[in-house]
Length: 174
Image (tube, rainbow, N blue to C red):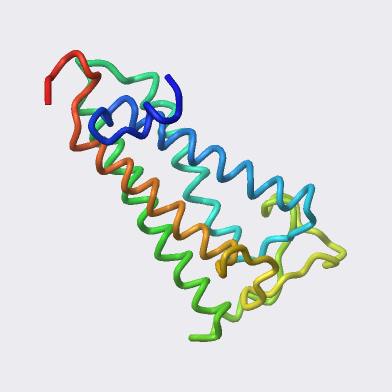
């Protein structure tokens, strides 16, 4: 199945939606880690919090892929609803973070610096401390937080569309 077939809305069933949610979420978190490790863009505390959604959605959607089948359609649909709700919450967090970067409102006091390497072991040197109100990178006017909003909304849309759909194109005609 090519990408064009995966996103064709007239054929966007539960199984394709689950695959799309998994692939987009995995690509996003790997991209964030790549920007950090290869590009040297260190995350702030809010950036790290936005990754939590992907850390939840990637394994959940993978489990849903393995659980998928006509006999487990309700389970997959409810799992997709959960993925969609997580992605919507993450879009809200990204919008909040974007507002901080654009100086629309102040950030939390804990946003003085990041820990690097995705919040694992703390960077004791504090050489990579990043403030939440400094956008380190922008593309087409959007920062990492802004792009997180866009991607999270795409994931939520795919998840909710899949939750409404049917399993497989051969089980139910549209």
